[in-house]
Image (cartoon, rainbow, N blue to C red):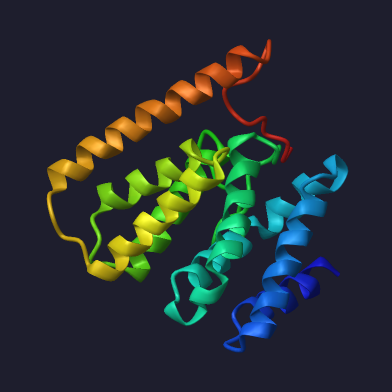
Length: 203
């Protein structure tokens, strides 16, 4: 049932008619809002569909034919990042090969997924530049304005075919990475006994 719903909503999100696209975006936002709030369903659902949803959302968001839906696209993207940043998906998500990832956390897997997808769509961009944006998404996920600003900055970079300074992006990536690690450490300190890695529940 979920698979049919997801593909129908994604089809609407990608539609070139603004009114159909808007229905698709609102439906996806509502679906994430409802499923993300139910503990008994959330992990099962996103283990199977997280990769599909975030890749399709990214694809629509970076398509200039869908600019009118940018604000809602950002909110959907933010929902998905927040689920991982807050460790609400309790098993490893399935990747492009439909197999669970083997990285230390879902966050690591999503950063790898996003950076790979963006570089595939925009091969002109620098790897460090793209990873810097990925860390910014996680670091700013609790601030709507800054999160949308990070997405906008990435969009501008993809459209301007930014080629300047690997050194600049290397430095910025390190700054964002350190901020990400600090946030993660602070979050774990607030939860006694918090495990560093996602428990393997596939046995």
